[in-house]
Image 1: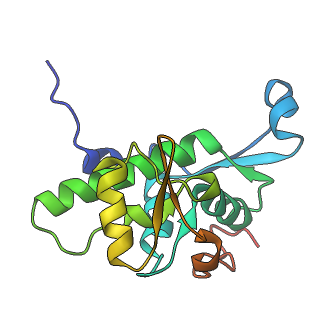
Image 2 (image 1 turned 90 degrees about the horizontal axis):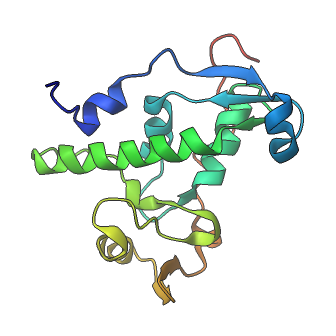
Length: 167
């Protein structure tokens, strides 16, 4: 039986990504025409690492940055979200192993400033980390929202960097 990969191993396996592909007919009703980038896991992690203490970003902001970097119309929402989760879990593994310089995954929010309950520690663990950095997290039903998150959005993710010959 094969040994299960660690989150760190999943993060470090780029599987030939990033890749820009045309939006096909099946996807066009949802995403429109153009191209989309499927980012590499480490590329998503790199963007998440760039968010300084006291600042925040959202998955959509990451997607916009990735699309701009690759001169694509959009970045794939599915893989970007999956790779953000992998980066978060790898950071939790690193922290458990005693590493100090981990990806600050708690600073990457869902749309509308929602804390991602699938990240390590769930809403409560992220609430503690965010509040330690000066943010106010409020409960709205089952969701945790960072109050006034828009005021803390990081500028470090833009302007887009040139990458792999894309201008």
